[in-house]
Length: 387
Ligand SMILES: *Cc1c(COP(=O)(O)O)cnc(C)c1O
Image 1: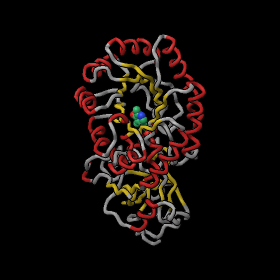
Image 2: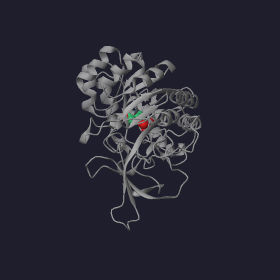
Image 3: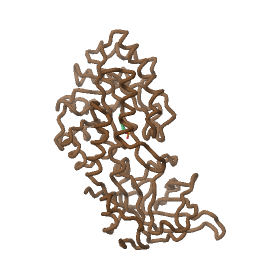
Image 4: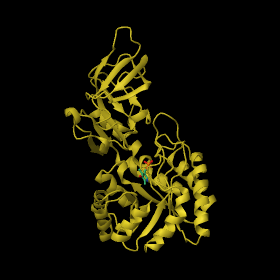
């Protein structure tokens, strides 16, 4: 397989259609190649592992219409964050009953739109949001999102969403007082939670709140466990089915036979796509510098935003893999000094790497295409090909 400018890849990619496609084609700009069959397999594995919990795919992870359609056909529900995401799901054939409006910060006109098309389930974490929902989706079912403490995820979602646990009882009462139907609770364990056992402390906190709410007279029936299902980057993870099964076993042990909803985003699509990119320059800042600087034609502003704080560490294949390696600072092409991907922990890349070499950034199917700017500095946004 000698399709690469700088030399041949040494790995046979026949078992991965996206890698195979990249090896056989040339691209004039950074391109994400997504393999629908991998998404289907991932959905099936998660669905089996989740054992009756209903999947609501987090649309933001990758809103490619063909991916949404495939998931509709497999019976998935959807977690949407805006009117546009709801319209996308509907256009691809999703029934409104399986779309939840999971953003806790919604535009009133979006709430009215959702209600009008038949979406009946909404998230909230504040009184003012419940007021908005009551005003524009009267009587709707709501679940309340709670902040949970977890430092174990690779991409924690911090405290932006959710109410403090101590505020939950009053918020549940408030939802009832404005005519809404509070049906359950939600949380997010943090994106890229690599091990199922990391869920335990979070589920303990949630179960305490759940049972306290029941004792206060709220008949909760729905637990939304959010996302967090991991993808393979640079550290080992469990296979999706085993991981999902281990999570759901912990849920059942604490919550019994409630309705469970899961919102995998990254875990559904990340491993289904790889980015074809190109090396623009390899240089040293001085002749005796130990580190080389490697500049790619893709950076933080053209799709690789999740390298922020070097949180997500993508694996990079080059045509020289197997040769001697050395440490590199990896950077994007734009004239913004923030456009450095990995510097604190340099990347080991082959010494033979040179301008013009084609590289493959692995497992980039989640949180890339929609993070690409329109064309900062004139560099084109990430292109997408769906197989
Ligand atoms: C982003 C998001 C998800 C998906 O998270 P992953 O870690 O990618 O699985 C799920 N639920 C909500 C509410 C989200 O905002």
